[in-house]
Image (cartoon, rainbow, N blue to C red):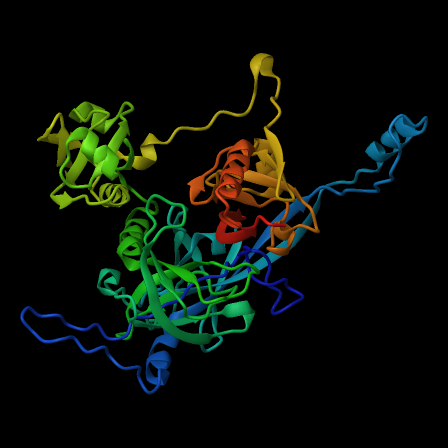
Amino acid sequence: MRSGGQNLTLVRNVIRKSCHVVFATCLGLAVIAADVGPVQAQSRPGSFADLAQRLSPSVVNITTSQTITAQNPGLSPMIPEGSPFEDFFRDFMDRQEGAPQQRRAQALGSGFVISADGYIVTNNHVIEQADEIMVEFLDGSELPAELIGTDPRTDIAVLKVEPEDPLPFVAFGDSDLARVGDWVLAIGNPLGQGFSVSAGIVSARNRELSGSYDDFIQTDAAINRGNSGGPLFNMQGEVIGVNTAILSPNGGSIGIGFSMSSAVVTGVVDQLREFGETRRGWLGVRIQPVDEAVAEAIGLEDVRGALVADVPPGPAAEGGIEAGDVILSFDGQQIDEMRELPRVVAATQVGKAVRVIVFRDGRTRTLLVTLGRLEDSSTVEADSDGPNGKTTQPEQAEIAGMTLSGITAQMREQYDIPDSVDGVVVTAVDELSDAYERGMRAGQVIAEVGQRTVAAPSDVVAIIEEVQAAGRKSVLMLVRDGGEPRFVALDLDQ
C-alpha cells in the first residue's frame, strides 16, 4: 500500500499520501438476552441509499499541498574509475550543481465532520508535513482547514474549519459492539474520483498491524487510494472506525482492509481537541505474552496477563512492580492478553494513582502506582556517530532481490522517512525479483517480517532463512512507505 493518492497528472493529480484504506459498516446489532432462543441474523437491507444520502454530507475530501525542495542532480556521465579524466569530470560536475529546486506537491484523502462548528477527523498521514489543507464538501464548496493536533501512534489527526453555517456531522458509535458479519458502509474519495460509497461486512475484530495501541476492524468493503481518513459506518449511521490501511500485493483493494476502531479513536480525538496533543498514561514496563510454559513455570493457574520483562526507572519501578511479575489487573480492568495492557494504561488519566494486581512468588499482590505521561517519557535517539565523531556505516544485507540497510539520519532525509518509523530501509530492488513485482521499492521501510519486529538487515535475513528452513514458501512483511503501512506477501520460491 503506497502513500498518498494518485499523481496530479492522473486521476485528479493525487500524489503520495492517501493510503489504500479500509472502510466498514455494521448492520443492526442483534440483542442477546439470557434464556432466550437463537438470535436471528439481520438480513441485508434492500438498499443503502437512504443511509448513504443521510451520511454523505458529513464526509469530506481533503486536499493538501506542500513545498518540496530537491537538489538539482545535474549531468551524470559514466566515467571509468581510474580514468585520467575522472578528476576533470568530477570538478566539472561540482561546478554544474545548481541551486535547490522547489516544487509544489499535492495529495488527496478523506475525512468526516464530527461537530457542527467544523471539527474534522482524518488520518495523520493524509496531512503530514502539509503547508496548506483544503476541505471539500459534498456540494462542492471548499474551506481552508487548520491543523488542531495529530497522533502518529494511531495515525489520527483533527482539523478545524470555520463555516458560516452549522455543518452536518456524524457521531462515533461503540466499536466494541460490532460483531464479525455485521454490515458496514464506507464513504470516501477513492482514486480522487470524488464521493463514493461501498458496502461490506466486518470480517474480523481486534487486528494488529504494528502499533502498541492498534485495534483495527477488518472489513471487505471495497476501498482504494484516497479513502484514507474516511469513516467506517455501522447501519445506525455511527462511525465505528477510521480507514487506515489495506492488505494488498499490488496496491489495489482485494477485500482486506483495516479501520482503526472508534474505541481507540474517540479518546485520541477528545485529547487532540482539548489539548492539541495526546496525554497518555505511562506505566513504565516492558512486557511480553504469557504462554502455557511461562504459566506452568511460575505456578499461574490460568494463561493470562502480561509478563513484565523489564522495569526501567519510572512509575512502575517507584510503585514496586518487578521484572517477572505478571500483571493480572490494572485499575479494576482484568488483563487477559498482553496487548490489552498498553491500551488500558494509555487511556488512563496522567497522574492517577491506580491499583495494579500482580502475580509474584505464587500469590497475588496489590500495588499502588501513580501514572506518568507517556509523551514525557520519550528520549531522543542518538545519531549514528562512532568514536571520535566518525560516522559509522549502517549494517547492510541482500535477500530476496532486495538490498537492505539500517536507517540513518541521512537516509531518513533522503527517503523522507518519518522519525516515528523504525525498521530496515530498502535501498535497491532487483526488477526481476518477486519483491519488485509486489511493489517493493527503494526508500520503503520493512517494519516486520513474519509478524516479528526487525531493527537490522540481519534480522530480516535470519527470519527469512528460518521461514525457508521450515519449508514455507512465502513470508508476510509489514512495509511502510512514507509512514503508511501495507502488508507484502513475499514469494520465497523465486
